[in-house]
Image 1 (cartoon, rainbow, N blue to C red):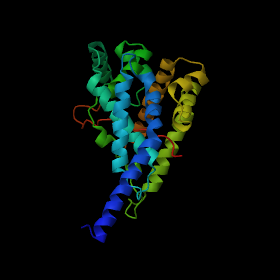
Image 2: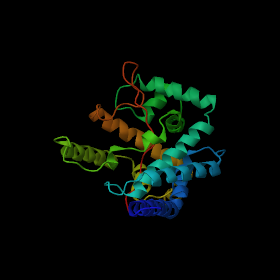
Image 3: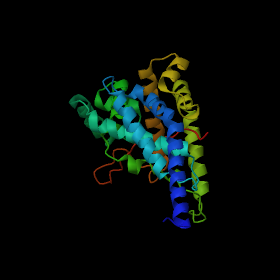
Image 4: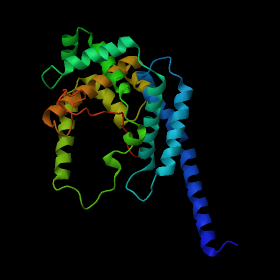
Length: 265
């Protein structure tokens, strides 16, 4: 016969399962939203149904591991895991053609020899590729990394604030944000607009393309170019905080994975 404590535990388990199920059902549209934001960067041959299945698994995992007592919103937490699961699926089942791998090696070699901050134009001049080819190569390079989505979905930004924060951390963060703001302001107008619509307005690539009256592939290139050059400008000012994507052989290789999240709502 089940005692009072056993009854309470059974109720708590049932309530927890119901909470997880509700989170999954409420956020299923987020899976298609994430894929919609990625589609412009992906080859036409990608199986979208497989990506949706991977994204749903990421959502289920997020609902199972989410702790509502921590200072994070579920939408942000789930977004990272969904996107990470989709990227892992891409890496497993969408191997890059040899021509693209050759271009990645060419751009990587040029990157290691150029003075910083490095621009897309400088990489194009050093490799003999067009700027569009360089941007496409930089985008493809992201999918050659092997960081698992378990690791990628745990950014420090989701950790609760604690009294043990490093002295001066807030001031350092404010300085970095100011530098980022200044760098964004210096971008060409279309790149700045594309970034704003993608990250602040949370629009899909196709929606941004309609607003800017450009093709989806052009919007994707604008974003890739802007992000690369922003990273270079900030890395030049803060090399320890923002290691290079392709360090020299004497440095540790710091893998990257896409981890941007939507603005909390």
